[in-house]
Length: 231
Image (tube, rainbow, N blue to C red; front, side, top):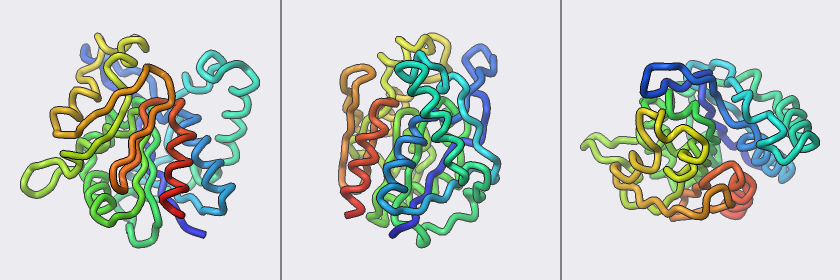
């Protein structure tokens, strides 16, 4: 089968508007659920991060209250342990897109800190979009799209229909008033046509080879859509 690139944040904090570093990383089940679906279908996963650092998990994403109870929280924790690729990431700057059939970006607030301004990630996204290969992005992962700027200064995703963690969800999560900027607003300003669904409900938007999911509940449906595009 194919190799699929998972691009994860390399940071363990998100700087809030008042300068406070909020502990974060990647959101566990946004990586675990697609990983399980894709590997079950026979695909190989390679993890890449800025600088090749081991991606930190957002500890909040392991709590029972955000996983529908203790049993599912333990299932997510086991899933992380199964993802041995997390321990040996490659450097994002050294990734060759030709080696992969698809690219996937999970979320967590981490991408708001590093991938949103990472030039290597931006170049990869421009290339992935132009290649026609499936490109799937979930929740706060679309922050990375902000770095996908062409030579003329325009965003490569301008004019694409997409979704991402919404202003309403950020408000309900308690961060809208504390954030330097809101993801839905920034993507809209960049020219991305954001289609918001109901808060916290699964919502996936596919436009050409771009698949986006709004929130953690969308990770599974995004993986399903990615498998369909992979054929």
